[in-house]
Length: 247
Ligand code: ATP
Ligand code: MG
Image (cartoon, rainbow, N blue to C red; front, side, top):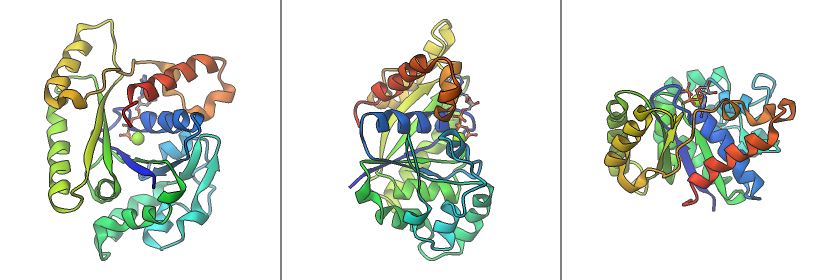
């Protein structure tokens, strides 16, 4: 039974999707069976992994809302299987609210396919609304990418209290997988100050390896065939994987 890891932080642009797609690619390279579930209407993870998000007949919206069987919607890629998303998913939040067992719709969907995978990675949108709530209710653990920036802990307290609330009432076994510092700039004192602050708050849950600010990694794996620096990108991706050996 595959482990379900939600990649979440309600703050936008902190590296959730970059972490998700690179982790999918890195884990696939180790031979693990991977499903990436894109729960963000922006569909950046879908695009990043090389799928034309507007060309698929069905996507995660149809699975969640119309009850379409997930196995027929999953797209196979060299970086793992994908439940794709696109803009249509933005309507799902409101529709989910009206459904019975609204917090557990994704959990039920994934329970039908999780035996086929070693890991299921769920890319969450930058909010704490229904789509993220469904992701956190489906997940075994939550991986929190944190960008090295000012006032970093302010935004994280909301996320941590949401996780606590979900653990108390909806998904008692939910745990924090780890906290990943992203866009770390080792040349500045600032990044190390932020890292120290995050480590003080999350203690051993903070990964020792931070992800450096690095344009190669910001490119999607799907761009790799067009990139001249495949080896460098693979090394960066492995760094993400190595930072999370504890899986
Ligand atoms: P959103 O909240 O909108 O879903 P996100 O948290 O998923 O955003 P990403 O889309 O992964 O964040 O990253 C935001 C931007 O930062 C993107 O343009 C991405 O290419 C860039 N980026 C991510 N990680 C790095 C990095 N380590 N170095 C440089 N740029 C990065
Ligand atoms: Mg994203």
